[in-house]
Image 1 (cartoon, rainbow, N blue to C red):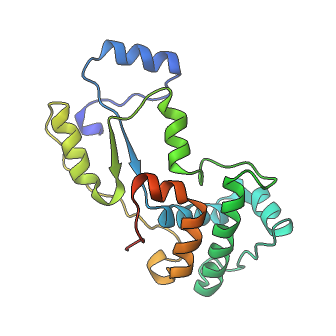
Image 2 (cartoon, rainbow, N blue to C red):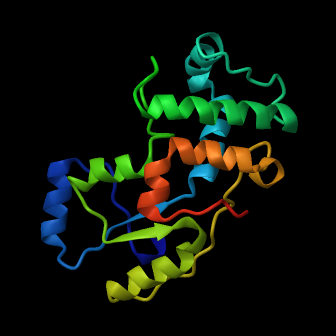
Length: 189
C-alpha cells in the first residue's frame, strides 16, 4: 500500500468522514481469515505475548486450560488449542467472565461493528489477497503494485501439523456465523 503513496492512520469517526468527503472515489476493504487459522494464531499470541499473562492466568485457573510449559510441544499445543477453541464458543456467546477480545472476536461481529462507520467495498480473502487487491486497484483506477503475501503461520507450532477434524468442528461450532456468512469450508493449509 505504501508504494501507492503515503499512508494515513489514527482516524476518528469524524476525521475519517472528512477524509472520505475530500477524496471521492475512495475504496475500502477488509481481509477475511479462515476461522481455524484465526483461532490458531490468536492462541499463539495469547501464549506468547506478555500482555496476555493475566488472561492466561484466568484461563488456567478458572477454565482449567492446561497451557503447555514448552510452546513448541506439538501434542500439548494441539491439546490446549482444542480446549481454547471449546472455551471460545462460550466466550463468544458472552458466557464467560472474560470479555470477547478483538483478537478472537468473530469476523461477522467485527465487520458489523465497524460497518456502521465505514462499510468495506470489498471483503478480500487472505488466501486470494493478491487477486483481490488487484481487483480493488482496478476499481479505483490505479495499477496494482506488486504484492508479496506475508507468512500466514508464524506460530511456534504450525497448524498444518496439528489440524484435525475435531479441531475444525470445534472451531466451526464457535464461529458458526462466520462459516455461514462467509462460506468457509474446512481449512486447507
